[in-house]
Length: 270
Image (tube, rainbow, N blue to C red; front, side, top):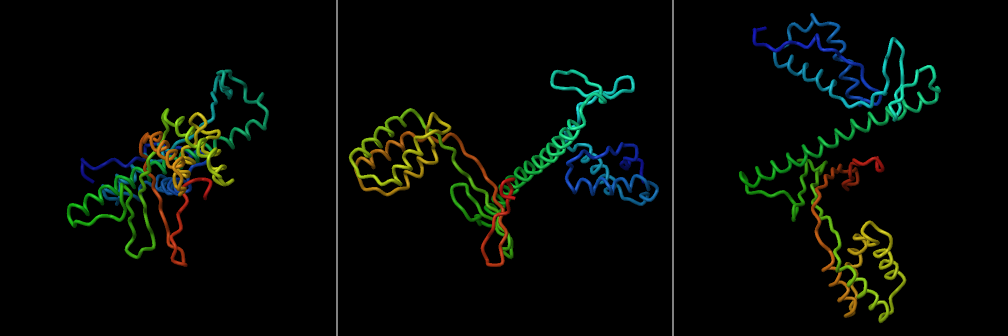
C-alpha cells in the first residue's frame, strides 16, 4: 500500500445499531464487525475496496436514531422528561421503559424509512430527467406521456416507472359566485339525489373554508345541458386557481395476468 493509500478505519468505533434499524443495516453491521475483528486478514484489499469499507462505516454512523433521553451522574442513571426534570432510573415505573422502547423503536424505523423514500424520490426524478434529456438530444426519442407525465418501461416490460405531475388547485373569492349559480340551478332544475349529494360534498366541511376542491372537479365532469348549470361550471372555472405542481413517483410490476400492479410505497397499502 502506498503512502497515499486510504487508511482502513479500524480505529473508527462501530457503534451498536439502534432499535428499529433496517435489516440491511443489520447485515452490514454484522459483516463490518467480522472485518474489524479480523483486521489482519484485509491486508490484501485494494485502495478502492478500503474506501468502500470506510464509506460503509460512515453510513452506519449516520443512521437516524431516537435515543433515550438519559444522563449518567456520579455513576447513576437518570431519565429526563419534557420539563428537563431528572428522575433516578430506579424510581421510574417499569411499564414506562417498555413504552419508551416501543416508541423509539418505531420512530427509528420510521426515520430510516423516510430517509430511504426521500433518496428514492430524489434519485428517481433526477435520473428520469437525465434520461429524458439524453433521449431527446442523442436519439430524438421521447418517453411516453404528456404535460410533464412520463412513463418508462423495462426492456421485457416486466416493470414500469411513471413520473406524474399533478397541479395543486385552490379556490379564490369567486367561489361565492359559483355557489350562488349552483343554488339557482338547483332551484330551477329537477336535480337527482346523486347530483345534490355531490354539490353538498363540494361545499361541505373541507380544508378551504368549507369547500372541497376535489369535489368541485368531480362536478365539472358531469355532463348536464342546462344554461344555469353551464353558468355555474364557468363560475367554478373562474374560482379555481393553480397553487403549484407536485410530482409523484409510481412504480409498477407486471402480474401473471399481464396487468401492471403498483408497488405500494405508502404505509396504508403495504
